[in-house]
Length: 116
Image (cartoon, rainbow, N blue to C red; front, side):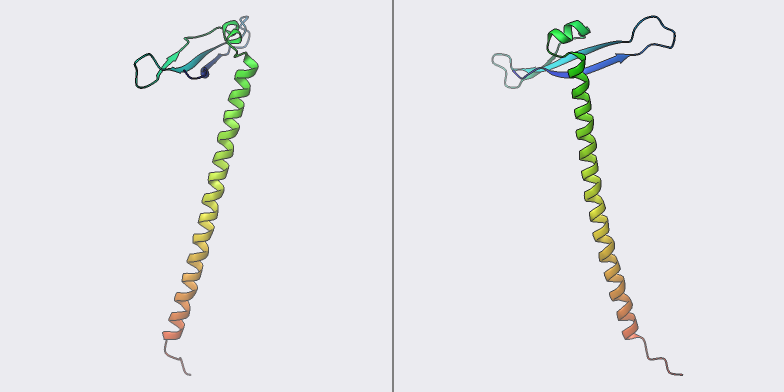
């Protein structure tokens, strides 16, 4: 059985002037291996109220910190991938410049001498 994890977070805002406070719920997920089963199956908790989520170890602060950590990790991975692609592009650009210079040198060497 895997550890429970945040599977879904839903925040429901309210229109300006609505007297009801914003609401939220979470759904926890877990992989459970049933007796005799080869593969673990995913099960979820169903929608948990804020009080139920906190009692299960997922108070709003932990939920939001987890979302922030995941978003920042995704941002960092995307930035690293962009940096790698930029280095690859720059290397290809340098190679193209070198090939172009070599081509131009060969053309110059092959051209008949122009005499006045």
